[in-house]
Length: 75
Image 1 (cartoon, rainbow, N blue to C red):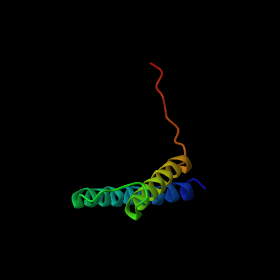
Image 2: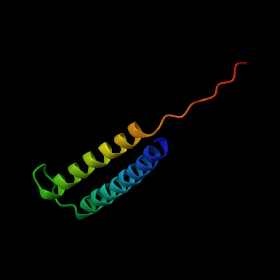
Image 3: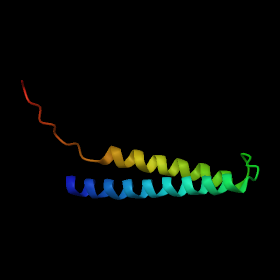
């Protein structure tokens, strides 16, 4: 079970990072265009949705990752 959770977490983490990079590149292109971006344009809606999905995907990847035991040394 832990192996399946780890693989799912890794895939979600990979997808979330890719979405974050895509969002960053889209934001850079929008800034380079110097077009006025208001809250109701299609471009800003896509940026907002991409940001929300990538944050949720990264959060979910961290939540389902199996916990690892930490060995502590008693000094």
